[in-house]
Length: 418
Ligand SMILES: Cc1ncc(COP(=O)(O)O)c(C=O)c1O
Ligand SMILES: [Zn+2]
Image (cartoon, rainbow, N blue to C red; front, side, top):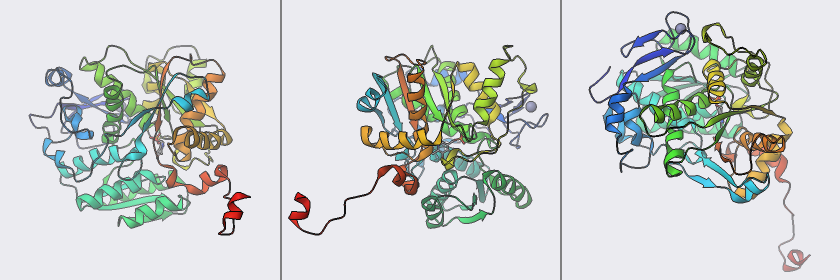
């Protein structure tokens, strides 16, 4: 699988640290079943990146030196990544913060950050000659895979909970994926997708389980760094369900350090709903025990019965939990949980004070930042980046709960005057 221009080395297990070579075909550690991290020959990548990322186009494939896919895939038919980083001064003032930024990843083709993961996993699927790709999803990973598969002409099978928001289901169906709406929750869909993919030989893109999703998501960190002119933020705040976006963002900053482009790392804060807080609970438990973890193979991640209105982060059993827990602890980040009512309030505030319209999950970082600011966990001049991972148009029913109602009038000037 490895060619000369790719710097991917192989894989390392997050739990037991066992290493595999680049031609290992499995997705999980053969010794312990843990999730695998893609490893690179960083000195070769550093040599290539000595002058930064150069002047290639502002999309995900700009970072090819740190991606585990063949080079010819750079002619990808849709533009993935290259999303804007906004300084959100008005919104920041609501929490007395002077350097708040929003990374608006709702500006991807299917309107969520998941397109980064789908792009890299689909390139990988093409590299190995897979013909059918599958995924379990709360909605966004599926609509993303469906969208990119449509552009590439690949067959996609998507397992979603029957209760997925209407807009996400509509996206999935419109892109022409085979949609299997499971009578059950995301975790049921995940297990079924695993079993079906094994049975029918499909390339399973499911979150966390597939090591290539993290590699796509990490490019979001590269863009933040470039858009800040090479400055490293104090914190990046990540809405978290499975923990794969969070572990991806941390990997991105670690990669930048490994190739010598940065000399410090941000804190990675996890933002969760109190009604779906498996990863935060685990971080608190480990921190309360006061003994630093030296052997991650002995650490188990909590499971919960999730019920949050932020459907994208409603997860019983986080599928990249250990990697995420490690990222929060190793980066010194906070594990923040907020009530669903705070998430909805944050959604409305973001729209009104920044012009960026998030789905509930994507409003969770702002709710978390406000709570941290209230608790004096953030200094007012810290450089804080909130990830906006999905568009408000994906779940307008929830947004409507805080948006209020229009004033209905007769079509006359008098009515307007009144
Ligand atoms: C909009 C949005 N935000 C956040 C997340 C959480 O990502 P993860 O499950 O990797 O923690 C998701 C995942 O579906 C998502 O779609
Ligand atoms: Zn292992």
